[in-house]
Image 1 (cartoon, rainbow, N blue to C red):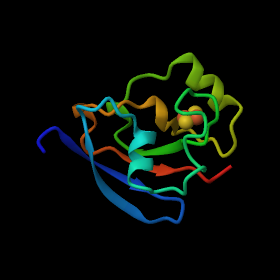
Image 2 (image 1 turned 90 degrees about the vertical axis):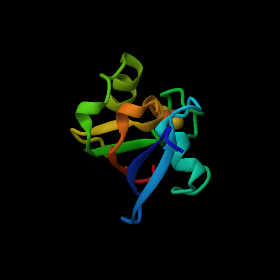
Image 3 (image 1 turned 45 degrees about the vertical axis):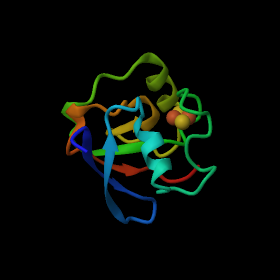
Image 4 (image 1 turned 180 degrees about the vertical axis):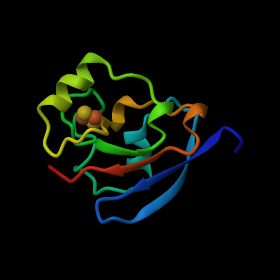
Length: 111
Ligand code: FES
């Protein structure tokens, strides 16, 4: 589909998957990871995408400039999460839009 964008997601085992994500379904990146089952059920998206659990943390490997700034909730959650790095984001706070073509992320370790 032409509304799909290509995203590279490296799972917690270090395997990189190139996936197609739809831009017309109001999905966020956490939901894409779940829909492709790139992390075991129950280990990602625990709070349902409310920026309240950090289970969906990922590291932005490429394409940080494509993302919008963090909202306060995301920043607050990341300030108390584990394994946080400079390039950490909460994938549930990244809506899938056509601008994100080529984004590359790596899932943070399970907490
Ligand atoms: S799913 Fe809980 S913070 Fe993203």
